[in-house]
Length: 224
View 1 (spheres, one colour):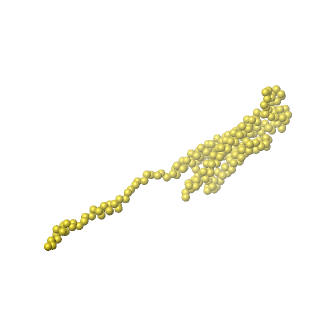
View 2: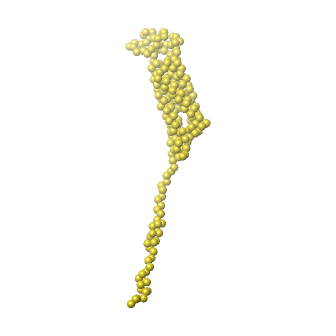
View 3: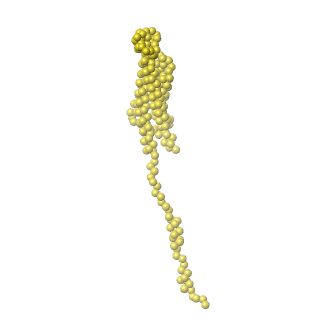
């Protein structure tokens, strides 16, 4: 059975896809570090957990690509690559959306003149009671500002990762389709040839002249 039947044919990709792959792994490392730092400040949130998982999975995907394309080609499977690219698009979209939503919420918190901070929901402004938005007074309050900034940066880089994964998925899908189309054999219409030799022989036998019995009868002497 051919390699194409197992999906092991390496799908050709443009040269610039290598640079995109390196950029993806670099961004994944940065997002992983930023999210881990934000988690150490603010604690565990769903947005942080999903982003940490996505960034870690992206690093594992890069390791698989590197080994399959340069060390162990027998590990390469084009359908597995397609599935991993789809996974990256979905999870990076989810991750950067959750991080952006978390940042938009906690970036609107108001900080007081002490250790107090919280989301402002009142009919009057925080300035009316001596609060100021993101006012840094003590170091313990400043770290929360930094955590929000880290999460916002991770959200922005996650959006870039989503764009890069979408780009490579589109190019890979087109290349995979072209590869399959080129590997499909062209089925030319078969010309039906009917072997009429048995019929010809049968017709020949049917047309074999029979002995002229009448002539023989005329030639024979009449018996009295």
